[in-house]
Length: 138
Image 1 (tube, rainbow, N blue to C red):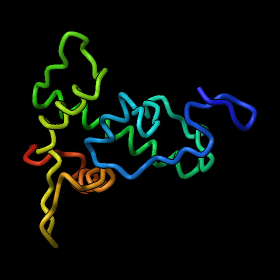
Image 2: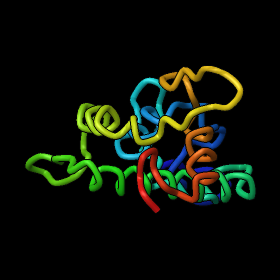
Image 3: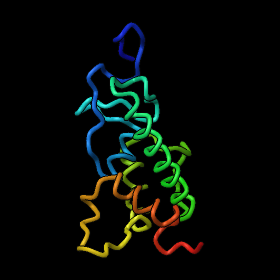
């Protein structure tokens, strides 16, 4: 916990969510990071940021993306192990490796480097596809 602005927050005062891939979002959502210092984003709320109005939308989109990641985990039958949850970066990375193909939407303009794409691009592709995975029937 961090104290600034007269109250407790889940993020440091000048924390900015970095640009990240879908894999990094999954790791940071559930586990955070020690270097760079990022708390698990699943605990973040819009008032934990100085730009709370912008972050309200961003956090909402992140949460929806994670819901789709969890749906994808069920779709492929991902085994969460003994704990039944994602509690380490290794499990988060394993999850990404097993579901990433469901988010590889083709581009009509160029060849895509999926490993380098931001989570936001994956989110927008999924949204344009009415939240159906690649190859999922409607």
